Length: 307
Length: 264
Ligand SMILES: Nc1ncnc2c1ncn2[C@@H]1O[C@H](COP(=O)(O)OP(=O)(O)OP(=O)(O)O)[C@@H](O)[C@H]1O
Ligand SMILES: [Mg+2]
Image (cartoon, rainbow over the protein chains, first blue to last red):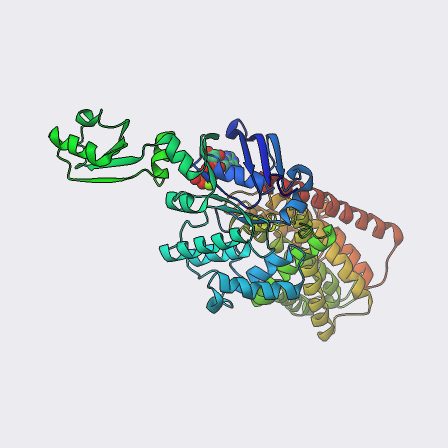
């Protein structure tokens, strides 16, 4: 039982009319892990999340969530899920506290239970001092925090977070990561989509990169970096339009030309930099760094993550 | 791990109602003018003001004009409130506040959101109807306990209008300009022509069928018959059947449209 995957999809497909937003993907999420979806805008991440959240019926393939079929057991599954949608849908005309309580009631929880839970979650989201204010005038980041707190009101086993940190300031982002780590330690399974590579790298045990409705790669952050990138990256910055990759083309396994810089993928960045200098290449500045998921992403999708 | 379970379908519908009640408790002041005071203004202006010029006669069933108007205004108020509650608030749930999307991420289903929303409208119509009856009694235009039954019929007429309108509102994507024709070409003519202020028989023969298809005319006939206690079986059964059919068909369409829109 404990080894049964929490989410299992085979050939999962979502069509909107003729258009295939999710074009047959296989995923398996195990209990207790943090699973990430990366991918450029329009890749099909949210469409996938909405199918897993049992709010959007699949167009094809098989899907099981918590061992049940969303087509027949939607309400039962949703009772045990927490969902942070990409777009907030708080009740702006209620107070912060009321939003938590009303939402908890939808799960059939008692008034007393949701009252206590709301107080606890207000603390969690650091919104206690705004508890009795209306939601409408809150800042975007505060609303996001409230949406995240709200998703925990039923103590979910599986938490689905669609770009949870978009719109949060760095401090709030770190606070949220910390909270997500703690939930993970308590055994909550997390599925996250994000455009922040550092977030994915720190939080996710396993992740998939989606592009155009398909899975382009799957693995742990370290595996993906190992498989799709080199150990180090040499970044050479040039004034816009003045970069010529020709002289550095053979200095690494691969060269990527971005609008403002050239990336040389190499096992030894310092050596490649020295070689470039010998060839008379004079960048405005240069930097040697470890490969990151960002590089994997660039390789697989041909795009930078945050565009 | 035996996690929480989904609430019973009827509990789910009442949880939708409960959330709207919590909203109402905070925001009722803003709705009082349109839902409670407007019908009272009509009753006072038409019933007492204009009515002072009208002699009780056959057309008013022998009653003073304000007394004659009271049960009909109860029905007209219910239908007007139904129109208000079934248009922009529905569009908002889908599009502006998006609260429906939040609800359906929980064990609540789209169909339960639709029926819960209709139940809430029903309660709203009952509340404002009760207040109107109390005001009418205070003004001395209530003739007897039959008004309680008038209230039931008025609410039924309101629901017969609300249910199809909620179904329609669930299909609106824009900013709600599609509702303008509803108010201009349905609600307003209905209030003027469906027998509230004068019997439909006074209308030109060509116009009468327009009154007959409106839920308000059926509601008005029922509400007056109840208030003045001259209920006859077949007319009552016919009017009720028509209103119940509109409510039932409207509710079924509303459920279908909520499912379609929330389950993409
Ligand atoms: N309800 C819908 N009707 C029609 N097309 C849709 C609908 N929802 C999504 N799509 C389309 O499906 C594709 C995938 O959208 P989706 O929201 O899943 O992408 P995403 O990976 O979450 O992107 P982002 O990073 O921008 O959030 C897009 O081309 C989008 O236009
Ligand atoms: Mg998305």
